[in-house]
Length: 126
Image (cartoon, rainbow, N blue to C red; front, top):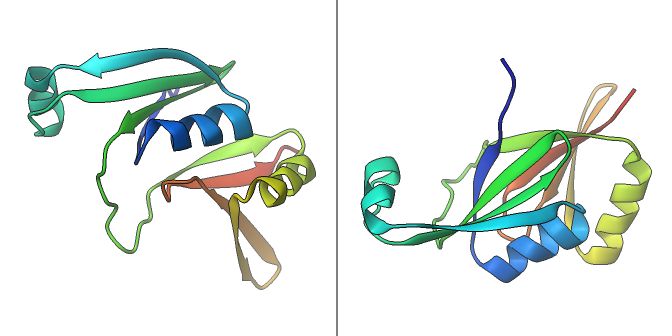
């Protein structure tokens, strides 16, 4: 078994493109318009929903454009293994992407927050 993709919600298309394409460097490979009937069947929401698909080898993220609000606290996230951890954290600071840092004893955990509040855990590849 292997992971096929991750589906998340973003408040607007511009923010999704800024984060997933411009910041993370994923390629926007397509746009999908889910018709209201299908949205109702899958997500119990009877309206057309736009989704953007961003990819790079080994990673596919489907971003659904909606004003949906996450519950608080929000534990939902996905994790990325990075080739160059320092590069992405420096880029985050330049791009005004929030970095969340958690420390407990000797362990430090890092998250990025996209422009819609989605959490992405980041780790350095060994």
